[in-house]
Image (cartoon, rainbow, N blue to C red):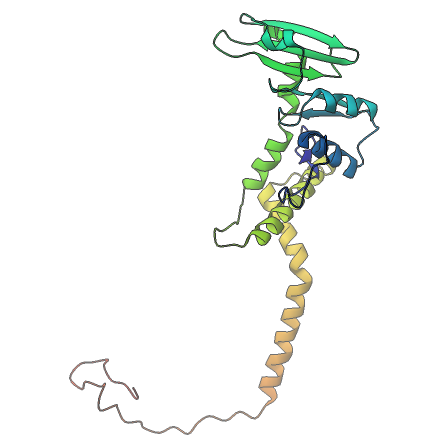
Length: 260
């Protein structure tokens, strides 16, 4: 999923259908293929936007390809990915960091606390700048702008109407509709001075979308009632009916039935 970092607005997403239907081209990492495919589908390449990725997607090859496509990237890197050996094996103390640069790509190893492992990151946008508590700036910026996907998922989980018995294709369709509503609400917040809660916005949206359908139903019901009223209706003749000799009990009030 490709989202805006601050608001969680969803630009594009792909539903993974398995290796059989979503094959990765030979010689290419799946994470790199997904990132570039999403950016290309959203028409966001070659505009010098900045993409933040987690360790599943980030790699040196992805950073180089995005630079060639005029796009910055920052993200954490797994230890089993190609990195300088010194970055992988360096022993750091708490609040210590180490940087290495290869042209526009900056690689960093940082240890926040004594009992934690080193965090390895790369960036094509930041330099070896340290900020609060001697933490590299690329790490503070990563923590700041990496939550767009999680924010969108959290917003989708609110007012969830999923059921275990619902078929998978229906769950996917409902999930897409939820994300469409979230995008609409984000755009409304950005372009309107009339503040509304998300629940109120959804209620107004439902009323607006169903207005034509409800109006047609009311008209049809009115026509049907007129047709019934214009017919010659007559009541059945009143007559005294005998109680059922099997079900009725004369001595008990209320246990008298006309028929079984």
